Length: 167
Image (cartoon, rainbow, N blue to C red; front, side, top):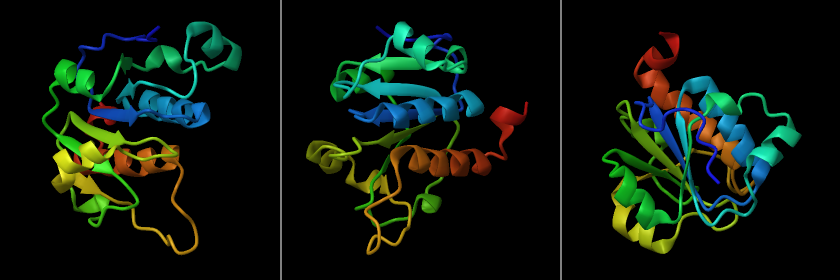
């Protein structure tokens, strides 16, 4: 069941795309990020958890009514339904820093599963569109998914002078 609380056809300043996320707390934190920024949240199945209205109510997540959540059965369905033109992918294994990208309004920021990252076929088809968040990976594996989404989303919004959220 999709928790599409706002009109998914509305023009979002950003789209945050989670491909097969497995940790519900990360998805919840990213949903809060979307509520704060007006970004839409795309969830690509399979998910490692269930998301439904009863679970959301039990968790007391009062910001869900302010989030546009769009669920997709798989990556191919997402591409077919959304036909995104400005796709940006993020991985600890990419070489270019996220700050090197130019994010137009309506960009799709794509993050992989916390445990597996993005599938090899996505890497193959979009290798020129991958970015990383510089970090000391000799000490830690990576930032968590919610932190990564926030870092990149706010850089994208900074590049457009925060116009979508300051109106």
